[in-house]
Length: 458
RNA sequence: GUAGUUGUAGCUCAGUUGGUUAGAGCGCUGGAUUGUGAUUCCAGAGGUCGCCGGUUCGAACCCGGUCUUCUACCCCA
Image 1 (tube, chains in turn orange, yellow):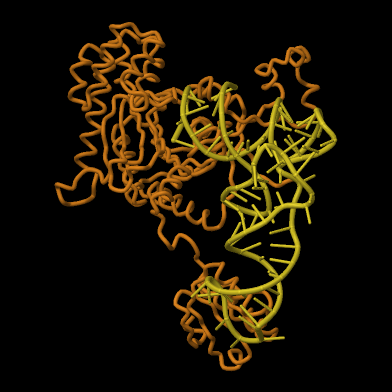
Image 2 (spheres, chains in turn red, yellow):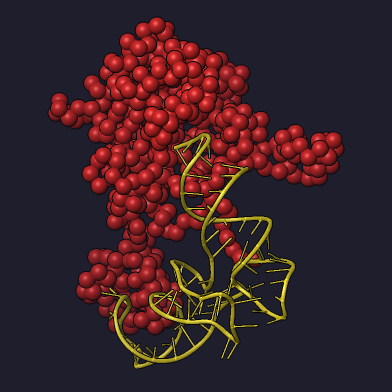
């Protein structure tokens, strides 16, 4: 058969892995600086842990793992005969691949509650799988980089996670816009508009504002059952761009007022404390942070703050970037209650490493040294020199010098070509003369210069 | 899941109305050059035209199915 990777999955060449590691390393560094601890969970979970957590759409996108053994024999003959997939699946697949890192984390917290100190702050950088149709910035296997804290409802964490987002994108050299909203504000809006029972429909519609425009939202709202009065109320909200304008509109909603208060406090903390920069006018984030009443986010377990980060297309040079959100997150009041553990509020964020990669690539923001880290390639002209070269490369490596040896005394032409392809900056040429004198011919590939250098100066 | 799109050499792509032996550039191998890459010149190797089936005297080309690429929905990082 013709070799191929599966739909929505990719191989990575060495240069690509190095650039991906560059992103992961920066994210990991800031996670640790902020006091988050690494954990790992299995790639497979009990399918019952995963199903029902991501909505009906999410269940369809779960990868199921077929049971081992004679699984068809153990399944109900009636369900098989009826070809009822939904009934048959749990009988023939008890495992699934994780869809995100948050639900496995909730299971982890419940299982290990006696071993963890709360508030518990964890990070994880691991792949997840979704059986989605591939598209730009969308794969079936991709990495998420999550930081979550559970066991506290302090708004300090909302502010802290915003700082964390800001710190990472600042170091990556990417100008981002961090949008914040609060699910309680949306709940309040639904209440005022008389749509408390179908808040999901309402948020899905207004979430599309920047994509389909005001008229589109009105149409969508009506299709989803909003009456004229409700549409008017919602439009009033969509025209507001800051918290102070929204507050009076929610005066009659307890939950709405609570959401406003939470966000106001969050913004206050961010603006007052965020930047370590001493100059007062430069306080605040390096990236844009704004309130966005249309920000909804699909995951239905969010209950408080909601985050979404996108490339700032108003920033110089970034205007042409077309990419969805590159990070997101939010607060969930009771994620662990589905696993039988109450009163465990949490808040977390997730970086979409694949999308960040695509954006950095498009903007040429990867540093040059994120490619080849080999310092020397040794090439030998005869067998005696090769034996000598193996000794030399061994000693260099013992000293921590990144060095490699061409494994045979081939034609110099061929070996130089190999060195060029490897992208190594310097080549050490070893012939009988070099073996005799201990002075090696070292060629700098960029300039073409060549000098005699002894071992200790390599 | 819906709609469209793509697939020809290792890579990027030509390929006329269905007609003899399917081409180019880059890359690869060898040589000019047995101690010098990226630049020059010469030669060579490399193909189940995604896969399965159909129409036809004859299919890379037409038809059906399937897989895959990219894109718009749905949803999402």
